[in-house]
Image (cartoon, rainbow, N blue to C red; front, side, top):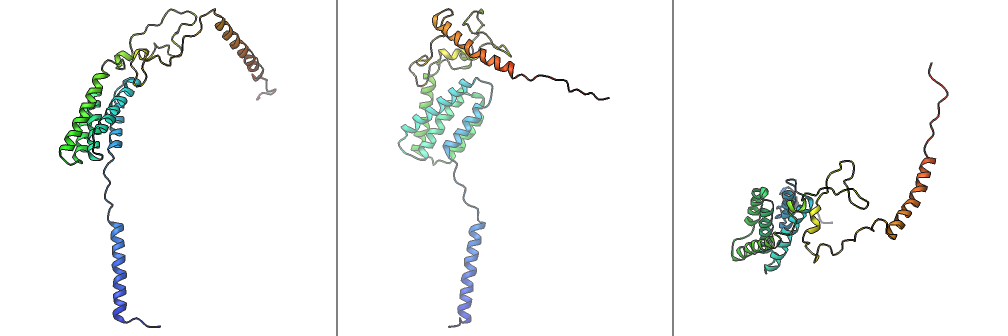
Length: 242
């Protein structure tokens, strides 16, 4: 066995020390932060904007649909994938939400600046921003009178006179009908609002009405008898404290 010389031992020790120092530096050095995902960034911005206020749920859904449908169209019209499509998406969502939820405009403006600051300036970026604005404004114009704004969704709806088969307010609050105007709204995908709407209930006194009423009676009577039989019987304990 050949014993190492002092010089070779020193060279080996120096190599080990250098490797250990490099490993320590690689562990201690913070990893470079990945750039934010633009889609997730604007998803969060949309959720935060929609969460403000007290609009009907269907109106909030309309804001989601318009802003992100405009974003998808703007991204498709932007030929270059990557930063340019990010600019188109951000511009479309920002334009749509700023018009639909103006109280959130300052926060949306700040988010747009943060997104665009990460994208290099140039003609591709400018065209993408313009495409996002164009698609959002075109869709906003098309959906301007779609019947899904808060006033159209919740029109006055007085309760009709009570009668068999006629809707009435229900307990415990007995409030008026909510979002009664949505039946007149323009859908986003269907060609008409009543495409899959079920028909009215059977008229009182009709054969179908009498058959359904008899079925309910047959079902309810055994259940009522079972409830009476299973009701616990109270008994005196037979003793009392003195």
